Image (cartoon, rainbow, N blue to C red; front, side):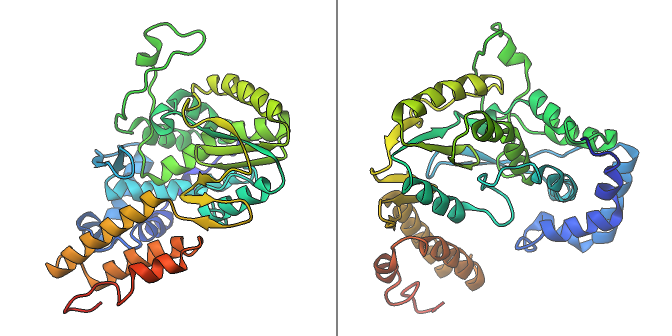
Amino acid sequence: MAVPDLFDRIASFEALHAAALRAARAKRGKPGVAAFLANLETEVLRLERQLHAGRYCPGRYTKIEIRDPKHRIVSAAPFRDRVVHHAFCAVCEPIFERGFIHDSYANRVGKGTHRAVARYEKFRDRFRHVLRCDIFRYFPAIDHEILKRDLRRRIACDRTLELADRIIDGANRQEPVYQLFPGDDLLTPLERRRGLPIGNLTSQFFSNLYLDCMDHFVKEVLRAKGYVRYVDDFALFHDNRERLEEWRGRLVRFLEGRRLRLHPRKTSVQATAVPVEFLGFVLFPGGRRRLPEENVRRFRNRLRGLRDRWRHGTVSKDEVRRRIQSWIAHAEHADTWRLRHAIFRGGWFVLSRGV
């Protein structure tokens, strides 16, 4: 059943004020955030008036190119737009959350990477084979028309849908993904708007919603008893290798209806007895985990960069502590005691200015 009358809960002063405080967490020192907070009530009132008058328009994104560990473009929306995103998701996401399956783990309260890894290990120890899948260029390939249709299945509030359309249509152009599907002509990929910016709260929500129907297809049509998904990285488990190959073919056909393709190099059927990399860990039968060598190399490089910035006084003690403790919190979920001891022997930095 579609839910009506949501807009006032999104666009009220109280909702936008609370959204601004959430969006500003751990970012108060950034210029755009600080400027908004310096005139918080005025800025929130302006947003409220624009939303109710139908004059709200998303601003321009700032693109940040990342090359390590792989090339991708992260898009940062202006802070005022991030406030709207937080207010929108706070009201709309719970409506869809109730319909999401248990084993979808990305960007959901009580889920996350480490729970997904533990669930993967549980199924690995139960089944003999796994079908590992990845969507080819997932965020750039998300089709706007299909996403809007998905939103309209549960939301009937016209003003809320209009706001959602503005957020989706306001996305900056992503890297081109030229793919033809059954029924397309040569111009179809050029005529359809695609792509969501990586880095938006709304993009995280929309990415879960876009593959929710696949989750239900896997659980209710394929009847897979072992299944884990984290964004576009997912795995199906079974004792029969031929059954998994059949499921792969059916998934290919299902995803064509969503205008998506499986990644040809990252989709395969494997024996669960073989060590595998999943969500930033190398998983071994028997429960042993380690970090990929690439992850350790990147952190050592990052640590050297933090040391150089600390020496030049361009990074604070709290920022250093936050970044290092974030990596440690992740590394502690693997067998890394010796590694951490080796990296941090003698302290974080060997400097005259201790941290």
